[in-house]
Amino acid sequence: MSAGKHIAVICNYELKPDRIGGMDRFFKAYNKELLRKGHKLTWFFSGGERFEFYSDFELHLAAQQESVETFALNFLKENESFDIVVTHFLALCTSFYKQLKYFNQPYIIAVDHNPRPLHGFLLKKRIKNKLKGKLYSQYIDCFVGVSQYTADYILQDYGSNLRKKTKVVYNGIDTSVYLKRKEENRGKFIVASHLRESKGIQDLIEAVKNLPEPVRKVLIIEIFGEGPFEKDLKQMVEAYNLQEQFSFKGSSPQLPQLFRNYSYMLQPTYMECFSLSILESLGANVPVITTPVGGNPEIISHGKNGYLFQAGDIEELRELLQRVMARELDISQDVSGLIEREYSLEQMVTNHIKLLPCT
Image (cartoon, rainbow, N blue to C red):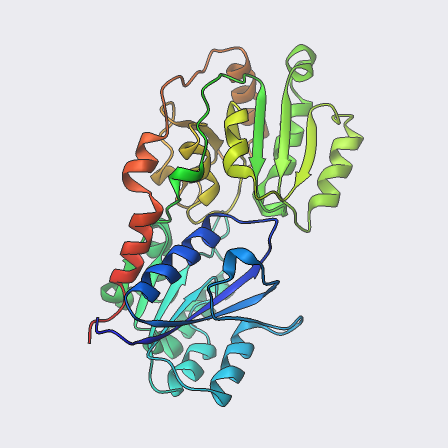
């Protein structure tokens, strides 16, 4: 790729100083490397606030109640065009991409981070997606799935004819910032998740309620994250009198240093693409108990670096927790090596830059 390209990155993602996670670190590393190569980057985010971590970005934040798509298109009407546009967390194959192509015919890369429902979309939605694929996929030059699962669903949703321009680029993390667990910390678990119903944390609360009292009394689960389902989860905990077992910690930029304080991460999710939280937990040498949805089985090997149970199966989750607490199930080997070898932030940045067109 020749030097001097003007690249726009459009993200349906809010910037929050108390939540500096894997994607924030990716954005920063990607920005730094492309600036080093002599390119100009303009970033559009759906909201949040400016803070020191993003000080070296040319940054534009959408106003409240305005979509980042509308915001970016309005910017293009008043300013210079871009050679390349990369989108993250946006719905694929919408009229937005047709409108985007109108401005100087940029090369468009759409990165799909969007999970699918556990049992797939309803028929009406599947038909709608196929139609959207026929209408708008031609305006996207490269589709990117963050797991093989995601790439397969791009083809299923929008048309198998997209195979040649659909790639897989796995997420990665900066392993250097994660302190490794060295002690067992048995009975202490972490949940690091957006708090919405599809994350299945309500199933975890039910499973803990059903544990034998001697097991339940010595178990601690600390939940990091925030979201629209937080109030409901807290009400469940209170209704079942599980305040000694569950505590809600909110968002924290210190998670890379905190993971090592736990024996396992719990992720009872119904929907996932390729979880950064799983990579972060494993990077800190903390195995993961999760469900085989989305790209989770591409990283979690049952009995080696974690355990898998069927999404929504509260009894299976309860049994897993009980057996882990009784040491009937145990993962004693270091689980961080795979992340360091295959899912580093450097690899993620390199592979995303490789997607950019050579001219």
